[in-house]
Length: 432
Image (cartoon, rainbow, N blue to C red; front, side, top):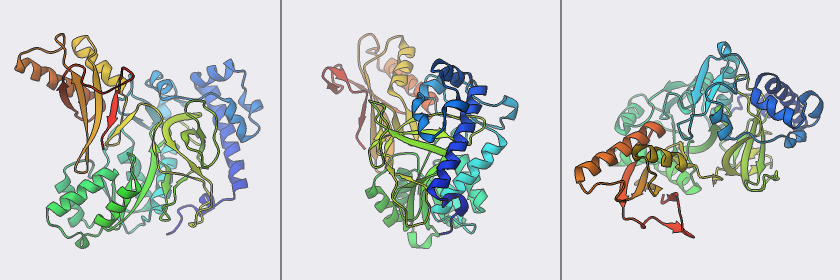
């Protein structure tokens, strides 16, 4: 398949290293001058970017940026340009006390669409394709990020957004979709529904499935490819860094190519914070090199993977990251939404003024992921009257849905029945 920007995606490693250094110096100067959070950080450690960053490895002297730092800066305190220069604002789902808000200048949007075009091209997408995007459109970055990248490639875009699977399938048939963009689990939901409707997959025009938004396995890839008759590839993005477009698989399916001319990546031990080498498993840390409105320095993504520095047969020289293996923190990923159990506890506490014993459980019905929240019954929290109990459960479910964007099933369980380890409640159990 053609490489979208061969002059950049195939540059020599020495040339790439120089590009990274120059862009990192410019980024550090930008945040030192324009972002009080970083200026304070650099001042406290007596770090002056123009003097103290002479090689790329010097970045390891700098502290990390965390999701809590960005949440605490809500909404605009970490922007590096005046708000009048920000033409787009996105935010994370409300998985922390405040959503993590990110901004884009016009140049940022051009950069973003170009990076997504790289990822889509690597996955086989060309101008003649019809691409159906089943990610949500709105403040989350997934839908619009893929959308503008697909338009940059020149493909015809079907912005169908999430849900309504039978309607998705009718559009897939009528508009002759060639590329499905979805979470891996939703691709299998589509496959299930196609079978239930008696539709012959060979009569569809599908060629590729581009997956993101949740961890998946090689077995899931194999099932998607066998049942939808597609090539399925992985891609990686995170809103705080830019959104989709950070990394993506080519059709060699040997890891996701990092867009290293725009992002500097490290792998660290989540506990010791020691920087690890290629092939070592740890938490991905990303520094933006070209973002104008919202640059981040050494951002801890919480995603566990490895860096692959072996050459790829496709000819791209960018290093790759493995599939995301798990989280290094307590974040729960359901349907592409990041959920922090502690925030769920805060919502439950607000409802009755007392925090119940609770546990988040990820379950899978067929191929659809769902969130259960098990709450231990106490006399203080729950009435003997069934009507009042149902009202309280509905209220819990509704308030949590308003916060995280998906509606959980609240299950009342007997006191003391929630699983514990060494006397401590396990706040999350994954049964998928």
